Each structure stands twice: as C-alpha cells, then as structure tokens.
Image 1 (cartoon, rainbow, N blue to C red):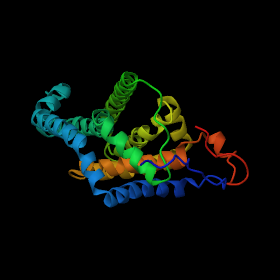
Image 2: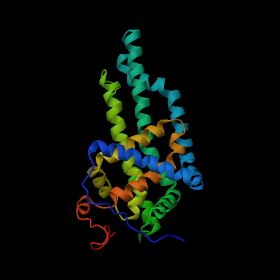
Image 3: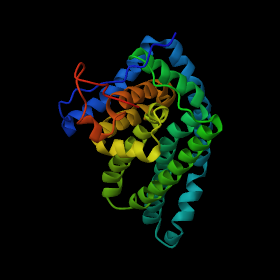
Image 4: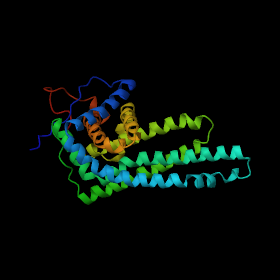
Length: 283
C-alpha cells in the first residue's frame, strides 16, 4: 500500500555555494544509482525503454560513421583545389565536427526520447522513489492524451533546441584550438543542463510544474543542475552507460526535484520548521 505523501521540507539555512552545489548535483546521481542498487527489480524494469531507444540510436550513429567521409567531402567542397595535406586536414576536422555534433544531438535527445517512449516505466519508478522518501504527490488530474501531447511537444522543442546548439558547436568546431578544447567543454555543460531538465521532468510534471517553470527553477539552481547533468552525461558516454544508468538517473532526478526544485525559489525563503505552523509545501 502506498504511503501518504509527506512533502520534502528544507530548513531555511540559505543556499549552498555554487561549488558545493556542483558536488551536491553529482551526489544526487550517486544516490539515484544507490537506490536502484537496493531495488534491482526496478532497475531491470527501467532498462526496457532505454534498450529500445539505444538500439535505434546506435544503428543511426553506425550508419553515419560509414557515411562520414562523403559528408566531410561535401561540407569541404571549397577545399577540392587545395593540396593534399591541407585538404585532408580540412576533411578530418569537418568529419570530427559532424560526428561530434551528431553525438551531442544524440546525447541531448536520448533522455527525452527514452522518457517519452518509457513514460509509464519511469513514472512508476519515480513514484516508488518518492514513496520510499515519505510519499508521492497525487497524480495530476490531467487526461492521458493531454499528458502524451505535452510530452511529445516538449520532446520536439528540446530536439529543436538541441539541433540549434549542434549546428553552433559544429561551426565552432572549425576554430583552431578553441574548437577542440573550449567548444567540447561548453557542449558538455549545455548537455548536462538540459539532461537535468529532462530527468527531473517526471517528478515535477506530477506536481503540475510545466516546462517553462521547470527550467526557471533549474536556472535558479544552475550549479546543482549542471553538477547532476554533467555527471550523468559522463556516465552516459561510457559504452552502455546510457542504458544501465538510465533508471538510476531517473531516481536521482526524482530525488533532486523532490528535495530542491519542488518549491519555487521565493517559497524556500518562507519555509517554516515543523511545529511552527503549516506544511512547507502546499502543492
């Protein structure tokens, strides 16, 4: 039987420093993975949609790898009359930029697509995580078709944003030195931020918090979101990491949403301690 919902309460001790919040964000991922380690049946349950989406993505990336030489040659048509060495290097840079942009796009959209495909799976996992922490909020009174429509809309919008960033990073990848150092770092930070937004969406949507408000709250906790998202990104880049760690990442995102994002920034300052009058979260 489900436990009654007891909203998370955060004592009004002020916000942690940015550096501390970066590590706190990493800690939420580790806590999510640890939760899954204690609930192996839930972990296996959460692997199903991730495996389906991974198969599609890997197939697409392998196909792109076989076409990369032709694409690099097409993009660097301006270098056809160059001597062999400069033309070769131009095509190597172009091929690297194209594949790097594709990987960036894949990483950024993998979570959104997996959450869309596996919504019933991850919704159930998020509820189990919340129940283990004191109780889950009631399911929003929104028709299923509306929920599906919102999820598709959010996934399409995220895909458009990801594509825009991928094009920008692709172009910047041609910059000497910067394109091979600073650009990948910025891409990782951007990817991590959006990953955090996707992985906390299940718990926040259940509280009736839509996309615009979700990202407003992430912005107010940017170091925390980046710490959690970049740590997740690094795990996802390990072979099969995106599949094996996806359930734990959803659990970590649920804990992060419950404990740090469920209340708007202005409400956090008005929290009362137990015994001093009403609950800290009124839904």
